[in-house]
Image (cartoon, rainbow over all chains, first blue to last red; front, side, top):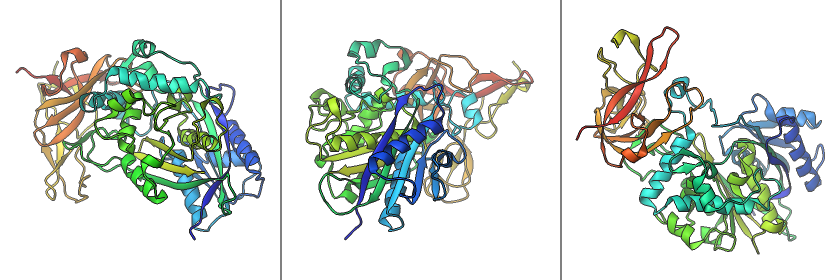
Length: 379
Length: 138
């Protein structure tokens, strides 16, 4: 019988801006909360995996040192926006392999303000004005407008939806609802994208304690799949922000590859999923994810919004947490923040943003590398 | 402006003639007959070694476009500037600056031509140039 991996407990440090707090302090709070929820103390877990991008050398070690919990193997994982997902997949695989009974997975970040500066770009690319993430996002949004029946109003509606959800999330950075007009009339960053259609880089931490499943006793949330994939060459709009690509649009994206692998591993189809948290770095990215994850068919993202399929009362609610648009994006923590939210959703503990009767959940992150991670949870 | 005052933003991306004109330098893979940019010895598509430098067509068609309004990190040049994707006859799409920063003046499929433009001034007072595409006379 294959090893099942279950979530023993989760913890989060709210996402936002915390000027007087170090990233290590935030990580330590999230880890403490997760361990407390899991009933696991020092010595109760045999390895730790830490996702972070900007924290630098030995990030995870600093947190566990501060908590007096070092000595075990600690592995720091960088995979761009999917760092937390990559850390989670390593933890899951380590338990499945029989190496450990219980592992700690956490992620944390303290991001610089404004357009994210990334060491990914060579200095000349910055000097030439070619290191502009929102401009790449804008081109992707324009392609959706040309090929998927997406309008500026659809892009705005994604932001309206996620901010409406975010009002009910005490861990979100922005807890304010916006009208479509307010989103459309906010400052133009790179047309067609306006300020309220883009998420803010920020700060925060999240942690998940995984353990070997002890057989179904009811109530456990299990990790059915955690698939990480990198990009294939050729897509000029890929998250690896290439300088060139082929003239074909038929290159499979890392999100498509990760989703197919995760759904196959879990033995389900996207139609079996009750609730989704996905990468809404910008409104266009959410719409593209609908098509890449199979929530709608290719070319139908605009129609999917019109139908309200991903609203709270729709067929498959997306980003009940408010998404990154409401929470902000602390890179290393964002993927695990999704897992924390979906764990609460599956246990019926999500308060005013609860999706009714959710039994199967899907989390998706994608970003620099390019890396995409799709995780499937079940209760 | 004389050529002596011009310096490329980094070597190997494009040729730079005395009159400020130039061509992008792509990579051609003899194994799979596909182009990439910038040129790299290994083919990103089929992994074969031995890719060759080839000058790419200066004229192409505009596929997608936007504009950058706020100066991004590490960039000292003018804003706003155009940003888009151009398709060349070599069946390659290039991510590039556009000389036209007003999206209202651009449309998908329009003809564009390579134009080297100023992006910075270096410590020696030389003009740093990079590649861009400009709407072409029809």
